[in-house]
Length: 109
Ligand SMILES: [Zn+2]
Figure 1 (tube, rainbow, N blue to C red):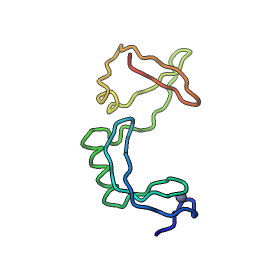
Figure 2: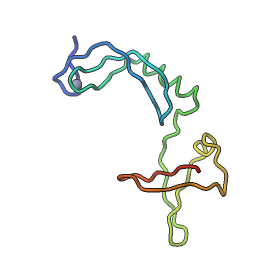
Figure 3: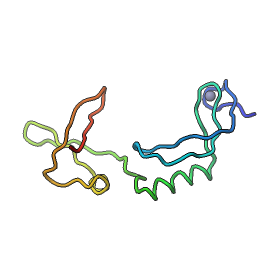
């Protein structure tokens, strides 16, 4: 058995992982899972397959950087076009915004 390259303590065992991206379930994929730190590793082919499924579900590349812009006394978040399209957002749409730990959560209402 292969030693875990992350913790260097555990051994890798063949198993299955449930892969999700942005809360969307992509499915179960074969992986090698560390019996100590629980980190999972997928081979090149599986990694490519996960990307293909994410592309098919149109969520690949939805996570991106954005920058705050000053507007009056507030800061405005620019939501990238692909997220606007994915969530079918429209100008004037009401959103609920709140902090959570060190994050800002923005939810369409
Ligand atoms: Zn490990």
